[in-house]
Every structure is written in C-alpha cells, then in structure tokens.
Image 1 (cartoon, one colour):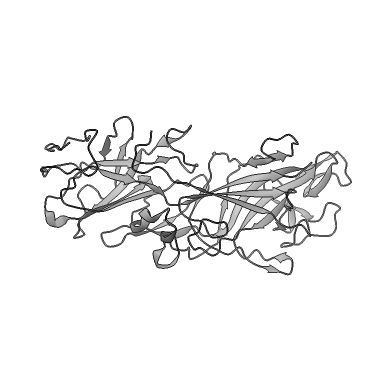
Image 2 (image 1 turned 30 degrees about the vertical axis):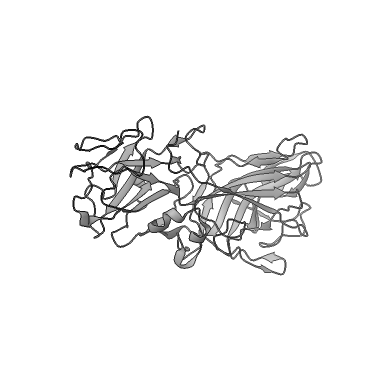
Length: 422
C-alpha cells in the first residue's frame, strides 16, 4: 500500500503498511511519526504490558540530527506523550517535527530515552553520543530505557520505530531458611559499588549481544571511577521474619519485598568483592550487608544476634540484638558473560539468594563492632557468640567454620521489539 502524505496534521499511519514500503512523494511538511514499544514501571521489575500491574511506556524524550550534525527542529530533548494503545498516537510538547527537505541532510539519526524527566540524554550532541548518569537512592530510582534509530535514508518516510531497551541492571533478593530456623531481617544494603558512569547511546542496540557488552572500547557503560556508594534495598522500618516450614512448596525460599514493591536499578559494572587476611574478610570491595538475627524458635537458642535470654529460655529480650553481616559480592571479570561473577550487565536482572543455615550457608562476616537495634543503631554490647564469648570482631565469620553459600540467578530482562505491546 502506498500513500502520499500531504498534511502536517496527519498523525496516525494507516494500518497494514509494510515496513519496507516507501512513498511516491513526500510533502515538505510531513510530520515525523514515532512508534515506541516497551513496558515500564518505576524501579520495578518490568513485564510486558499484558502482565498484571504493568503499563505501557507513556512518555519519552528525544533528539534528532541530520548527517551534517544539524539538530532537527522540535526534537531538542522534547517530551513526547501518548500510549501504544488504542491507536498509537503520540504528541509533542514542542510542536511537530518534520523530515528534512534536502536530500543532502540524509541519513538522519534519532536518540530517545525514558523517562524524559530523567534527563538521561541531556548531554548528547551531534558529535558526542555519550552521556553521564548518576543513580539516586532507592525509592527515587527509575527504570531507564534508551533507543536509537540511525542512518534513516532519504525517502524512507515511514514512522520511526523506537525499540527501547533497559540500560540499567536490576537487583533483587531472596532468603533461604534452613530446618527449624527463623531469620529476622531489618535491612539489606549493597555496599561499595559505583553510582555514576557514562553511557554510550550509539551502542544501545548491542544490548543483549555479549560481544557488545564487553569492557574496553566496546563498552556500553564505562566502569565507575569510584565504588563507594551504598544502596539500601528499601525494606522500610518493619522487620521481615522468615520461618522454616516443613511443608513449604517453595523449599523455604522467600522473596524479599520493599515498601515500594520495587527492586534496585543500578549502574552495570564490574568490581572486586575484596580479599581476606587469613579467615578475616577485609571488606575492601563490594559486599551485601544484612542487618539480621537468626535463632531456633523451638529450642529458644540464639544463633546469630540475640532474641531470647541466654540459656535457651523462652523469655525475649527487651531490646532484640541484631548484627550487621557482610556477604562478599564479587563482580570481577566484566567480560560480557551473563554468568555469575562476571559483572552486572545492562538489561539483566540479578536475584541474590541469601542462604541461612541451609545447604551449608552460614551467617556472613561481622561488619560492626557492636550489636545493633532494628534501626541499625549501635547498642553498648559488643558482638559475641550466643554464650557471650568469644567476642566476634569486624571481619570475623559470625559462624566460624561454616562456608558461605551464595546463589545468584541471572534472568534475561528484554522487552519485545518490533511489535506493539498489548
């Protein structure tokens, strides 16, 4: 089917046109049409829009340039709003953008990002396609998406299909509990990772291709210059309790939820988990810090931290004592692999299962001199074993002789491209 477009008010392309068709002639006032596809939610695990609770992309910012580096009018980081349903109509806050009339302006390229308010591409220019981005604290993070369409030739006046891809790494947690145990967790944090880096918009279409995710000259993200940030997973002020259940259908593995029902969205990166001196963990690299206690609810024995009066009595302490425990997080060898220990990659979701008293899992390494309350405030009592001796210094294992079991599931996190999201 071939059509002659003659009106700037013509916004919706007629259904059924082939992607490869061109037009007999093009009026100089033809509006540039955009057809974005992706499901997005704020800092939450993204599902297709036919999934419960998901919603289609409802805005994006965009820039466009001719072959000579001239910015296309009305595409200077402007905000487009609309919906992929029911008629895929989008409007711009800055007026319509039109295709260049001179053939010498071609090919043209477009770079789009979600959400427009994120300013994710505010530094992009005709010559520089790299932009800097800083991830905010949990609760303020946004699922960041990007799309690029390059080298559109003269006469190719169909709508511009923007296939958005997730460019951050998503992090979530699970807890596995061993037989006859109960674990109370007050907080989960990721410590000593990078919070700022540079993203190369020109390489967004290589996401999902391992060779395009490698470090060095082909990197989509630069590696953060500093790795000192701490991110709170956002469990809030309530303590979450995970109890062993002999008949549990999920084998006593539980999702950790947050007050905002969202996961962390962090910079893809590689960093070392730090080293050991003898059996002491130096905590000089990236690690997961868990404020928790673990005990046997049948025998009333404290195992890590203290809930009951020492000696296996059912009497609970007036102020339960938690520990801050470090679990080594090794993101070294960022080589484009999706395997565990190979770094966080863009568009990937990493689920870390913290294992307590199960499959050999222990309690981590002590990260604080003193026991803490549920809010993380130091008490006057130094961390010790359940009997009160010996003292357990920072860096020492909370359960000596027990190996840490650290399971990581890596799932693809890629939205459909090239088709409307229903």
